[in-house]
Image (cartoon, rainbow, N blue to C red):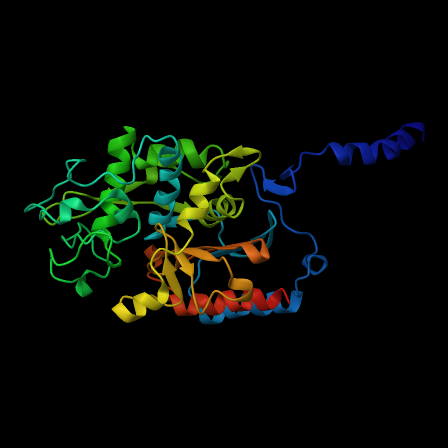
Length: 356
């Protein structure tokens, strides 16, 4: 009986000492090696019935293979296999944007450096006007270089005639820009993109499923010598990427990506309305530095300040500062599945609706 009373007395102490899945720094909660789930979403202002309806909609109307919604550092909704890794498609470009941040801040990379100064050329040669394009032009998809990329999946079919556009003056979603931006980052740092992800993001963020051996580049070098730096992430690690951005580049008291860079890269450079006039628009979005940004007239109310990484077949990492929210959404391409962007936007609307 005496031992029993001691155990009862110590229970609160034992519970208090149990390892937590979160860490609090300042006013922010961060996941440790695993994410913590919110125990009672209704206490956090979410409607359980609406979240159940959201799950039913995902099952019945989309081809998602993984989804997680994180609010204030904890998971409030999940669907599918969160640990399964798969192809990120063009979400890779937003990750690249993040990797540039520390090297722009320490002046190892000068965004005003031109292709000519960096000795960038390609199959068949670049035109003199194209060599005037800067790194900034590449990161904002405004280079005016309409050389074929080594991989397809962009808007080059809508490109003006080569040599007709001054660098920096016209926005076009162009894989040549993105692939060369990756090459330049490696050239200037002496490390591969995957090594940089490993050291800058995967380690500090305690990514659970990242495997550098799974990553590989692809492309047709007869078209362009600059390969596409494809990435494979899990849904729950995609959420860590988004949460780092939501926290302005800070993770557990450490500034991983400079705050100024996070703000700059998620601010509109190419407005949605101008893209409409130029017939290069993409759904609701303007464009920053490799991030898609909700722009006028769609950046109202809870979408104010929102931005997303977007990839073919249905890959998304969406950050919504007004809700302190991150949505990571995966559609595994290898299963022959895809979720169009307009359908994903409906999913987002249902997420927001469940929080009212």
